[in-house]
Image 1 (tube, one colour):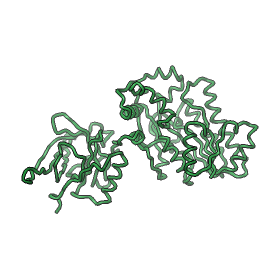
Image 2 (tube, helix red, strand yellow; image 1 turned 60 degrees about the horizontal axis):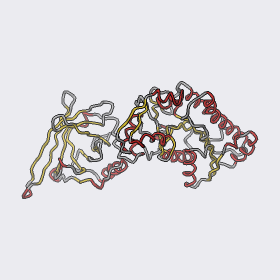
Image 3 (tube, rainbow, N blue to C red; image 1 turned 90 degrees about the horizontal axis):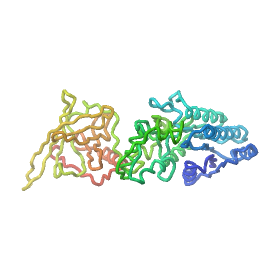
Image 4 (tube, rainbow, N blue to C red; image 1 turned 120 degrees about the vertical axis):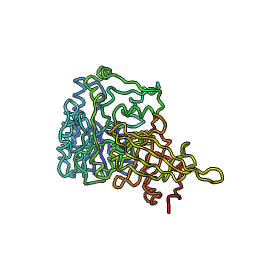
Length: 440
């Protein structure tokens, strides 16, 4: 299969060219000379020999938006796209697919959006995206059209990430004020995989958001990078600094769009870097998004755990949760410890738990001594029956597999182990709890 790529010499284009070439596709780079009017016939002939055209052409937006540069942003996108659709109209043999890039800057900065959002935002960038996409929609009907709206594309070897990492040379991570703005992103690895997925899945057409499902704020992104790079701390850079550097273009840094990749996930695409922790090769501590606390109450049997001091040597461990009238939770942990002469001693600890933030119901805090609360993160949960769960914390030190029964079927164990491994945990460190006193 022959794939023509405009913008093949750019950051995304180079990665995509390498990825598609490794997958066995023949790549036809379309450099700027192809889009001169005197080369129009050559462009038509070239596209006639191709099965797919990927349009990535466009000047970078991370520069100061003077009047002349805004014109360059428009020309580099709209004129190139117009040349391509004109050539496709004239081509005797049409490519099967055209993928034309756009950006999540199309969406409003308020609310959460996916491909079914019918409205665009206000300002230069949304208007530019709309005009860019309108040119792509002149693609002839015989060619399947997919418009890919990119988030911020992250890669350790260049692109936006390189600029973001500059402060880390001084062991500081920089937060772009206010820090609460959404940070829609995708790893370059997943972007290339998604492009191949779109090429191979003929049912996909129209708008597709190329963003990770692991939604972030700018502050959360910076915090994760700071942790991965062992930064000493973070600094917040005021918005006026970016206005001084980028003028009107500062808006794409100090505001952001909260965007979901609904079309990709509906089509069965699975992200390799679904969370920022996975991208940074950290352990993923993302919790479940919904929790019926009353259903979670009752007794749980410990199936496996990471070894730690306060449970060392315990067997037949259970945790019983009781919802109290004030909304807090009574926690009773119990188990048997084998002492001298192989005598088992029953041990019990009673504490309390709370949900500090109702917007993050999977994140609980548990205390067994005074006001010293520790994290209790529900990472995975049997949502249908609340019959088993994977529990962790904000660190990599703790991991538990819990069940409503003293044993779990092997297929469920394998699923939970696979999920824990996918999150970055070393499951070979799990200790499997003896529950023989509870098994009859």
